[in-house]
Length: 475
Image (cartoon, rainbow, N blue to C red):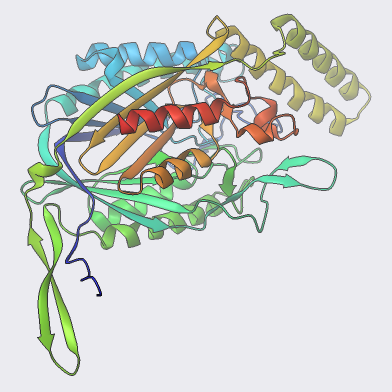
């Protein structure tokens, strides 16, 4: 006997208290900017689009638990810079440090805001900029804490073809760049946050794609594709847009590594229209789609209607924070070894320039930049034999929100979504400081792929993390 079809088609939803505030955090136009080893400039020469800091506060309906997201249009931060930012934001905002999770859009066009760059051209502007950033972030937190309101969140899924796989084999070596024909995760997760009076408070877009449209030829401060995406979504929805970078370790834009800001804007519109398509399809918060019965017409038709539901049933809340202990990769170089390599490349650059070999000098300069960053990372690595990877997970109704440190291959999000198909999973990576570096799958270790070559944790770490997060979701 044929079983009857389902008579309801609910959209995933959450009920919580919510507030969002944002501000401009664009640095001075002539600040130190060199993010790319191949870049020939040191200072920025102007601004493509403004950078933004966004604070979003989520709390349960009783107000006893809350999670604060501080989303920044920057690439990464070192451990010292991150710790100072969180401490200042928490102090001014009147909250505990552990409540603040910093996530980065990961734009590579914003510059490298490290205190170790202070002596370089434009670097003198970095310390006061970071101080001001902490002040601004704290004020945003304080504003949000004073403006929390009950809200409903409705979630949807879309698709976007902006991101492509970037582990490209050119016949001799692995190159970090567009690798056509390899399937990728093209999921766009969207959410619309609505107050009880019907006002749209925010749109949220969660997508995995490295913001590397703009590269070494770009000398402008830029949020990369996120800026145009955000502008488009906000214009159409009339509400602020919060972008969350997904697990994009092996994903980047099809057209990237350019100096043309028009390409970044075009990439942003591609994502923006995909997000708007998914947002447009969302029903109103607190409603569900229900079968109304048969209607006899030219054919016997099925009538469906959006009906009110009790949104309080979506107010279930569970918050978990922990540090996942991941073994360091064996054979890590010492500070002395990396310093010797840096000295070698700096001397080789000087020799090449003296001989008029500008191509070799440029390569040596890029390698010096690699070694400088490696030294900075080694100096800030936590002691011991394991890296304590920061993870924050909060469940609200039908959704699971995850903020996790490091740059992860997309299998992190695809596997979690496969294991928990009944839940919407929003995954924000590039959280906290960049000390964790990349987490590639076990099978990519010792292949020479860029991401695994600079990984600081051992093979199997990504798989361990997937199991740990899965256990926390299921517990």
